[in-house]
Structures are given as C-alpha cells and as structure tokens.
Length: 268
Image (cartoon, rainbow, N blue to C red):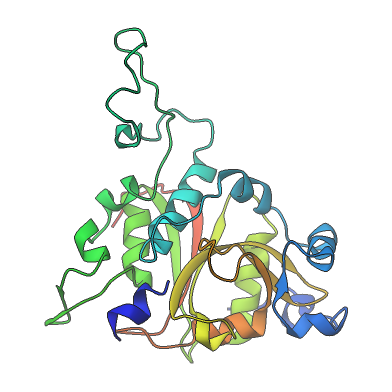
C-alpha cells in the first residue's frame, strides 16, 4: 500500500442485535451528518450512547494526516483517565515565556494525554508514523500512520486492556454487530475502528477513529471522525462500516479494537 493512501488519513447477545430493525427513513442507508437535524434526532433516540458524553468531552482533531491513530488513542485515554492526575503533563505544549510570571515550580500544563505524547509507548517512532521506512515481515517499507495491531500495542503500552478483532471472513457481520452494540451500550469501554474511506463512500484511504453511539432502528453507528477537514462526524450504516473494515492492510484485514479500560495484567 502506498504511503499517501495510508496517510489519507461468538454468540449473539440478542435477536434484536443479530437482526436490525427496519430503517427509520430513507437516510438510514446513507452517511448522515451528525450536526443535521436528523443526525441530532438520531442521537436523542439511539439505544447505545453510553460512550458518547466522555468521548465528546475529550475530543480533539488530529494535527496532521498521519495522526488519526494517536489522536484516537489520546481521546480514549483521556476519557478513561478523566480527572486523574496520572495523565502526563506534556510540557512541549508550552512556549519559553509561558511560565515567566508564575511562582517558581508551578506547573501550568494540564495533565492530559496528547496525540504527540502517546506515541512514546507504542511500537513505532514518530518518524516512522510520518513515513520513515521500517522493517515489516522482513521487508523495508514505508508504513505511515498505524496498522490496527500497532495501535493496539500502543494502547496496551499505556496499560489498557484491549480485544482486537480483525474483520476477516472468519468473523460474521452478526458477530461484529453484537460486539459494537454491546460495547456502545455500556459506559467505561470504547470502540476504535480502522477502515478505508473509499470503501464506505468517502474520499481518501485508510483511517482510524472512535465510535460514539449505536442506533438500532437504523442499524447505524456514530463515527466521530478525528479529521476535521474530511467528512466530519457522521452516522454510518453499520453494514457500510463493516465493508470498510473488511479491506486489506499491509499484512491483514482491518477491523476494530474494543478498549475495556485499565489492564489487570501487564501489557504484552
């Protein structure tokens, strides 16, 4: 896969999840802008919105096209650690004179994970995220951004418990629907998806973002797109998102990560 494409950045829980209800209107098969009247109404009536408040409160846009993964990781980490002082104080956000008139030793920074600071505990350097060649499967390639397993390793490096699901033919649409609906209906855990934009009707290539909600009536998910210059937050038909996740990356298909909070065992 070319660098520019990458940078463009079990058993069902219930029959209701396995067999989605009839769509509410003709827009159910389309990408519905979150900020539209219909988009806001869908959030108000959606069944799975437990994760939305925390993610919306901690949301930030990616600073460059390669940082969709680190930005998504930072949002989720901040949602999990909200109000905790164990988040890093990233002093790189300060300019030389920012603390000129403050008492000695006073730290002006807010304890917060940033899309820059999270990279340090992942499997890639900042330069590799931005395209520096690296060795994968015995070959030296440009691998800008993050593959899904690389992002999972970053999250585990920060002490989070995760479950990675590759959207291969071995995983059914019904299993994926059950996973996402169950997670989005419960607070404290989160869903991160990796898909191709051009496979879901958007312009661009590979992308990563968090999901904020699930609406059973339209069988759609709220994709909280971290790229402010692209499609924006949209309600996406789940079938369409699954199609985007079933695309091939460098070594395997894309898919999703279920982030279940802080790990009880050491990160692998």
